[in-house]
Length: 353
Figure (tube, one colour):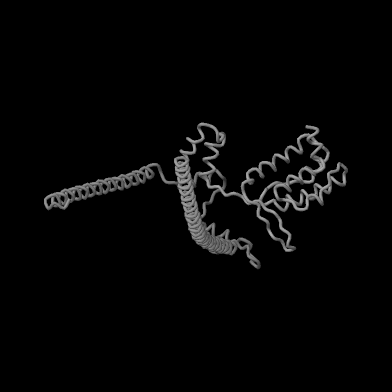
């Protein structure tokens, strides 16, 4: 392996391989079979340029890191590159190598890729890839190629049908999602309208409520004002009666005299002229004379009997009136019950119930 890596380290053999497959021109004039660093860099630069120009046909890339590994004779670096070139060039060996004319007139060789159908690729991979032309089973597999191709076409048709169903199902899902999204947006808009209407109604209710509260408050203020005015009027009259008003010289004499008149005492200037006074020298004599003026026990009994008789008469009349009132109420209830029974009988007879 070390000898192999050393032989391919200068890039000369890579150039020769590409030249034999028509991917390089002027190989003998440009490539140098030497092991110095300048020759290696020159050879690999031309190899990289050739691979870049044939990248569409070959699909092989040679990076600068890979070039450094090959020039350093790292183990396996040249083998990996040769394996990639062999795999690509062996599959394209049967095809012609066309030459593309550039602007300067020099031809650039290109490998022509052989186009294989899906049936041929499946037949090769599944049936004859592991066989050699001299194997006894090879003719049998070649004879079954039509059946294998038909099976491949059926599988492809099934895949296409499954793909179409998948596409249709995906389209249905997307359509359902769009419909649901549109429905959700419509529902959201309706909810927003309902919310706004509810908010406006709530604002109207609150405004009406506040108006009623303001009306009640104004009414209470008016009632309070009237009560205060009534209280002020009463106080004014009281002050006027009592003589507490400013400028009144009596200072409550009129109020005092009026209260005396309420309890039966004459406060006029002629009071005491019509009534006889009790003349007594001592308090005992005055007490005896006042006791003589009191009514006697017999008189009090007579007045009490008259009063009690009047009370009994009033109670008797009250009891009679109560009994008469209860009798009238019972008669009215009886008449109402009789009327109800009569009406129900008429309704049952006519069938209106």
